[in-house]
Image (cartoon, rainbow, N blue to C red; front, side, top):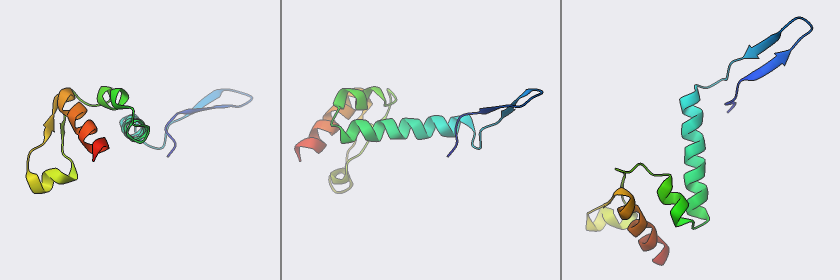
Length: 85
């Protein structure tokens, strides 16, 4: 995925080549990569900061037991529960 516009310098002008994908898709991809990296690094604070304040998160056990985790405090609890299990 090419996300940044590229400037091509020629003898006569600088031509800007637009990105292949829209900027919002690149931002989403970068956010997803940051969330995954924080999770894999077990960096709870970074993981929480990357979440929307009104996030609702479920863990696999929530499928069987029901319930979910809401907001930043809920994400902290979910993160701790997932790491402990």
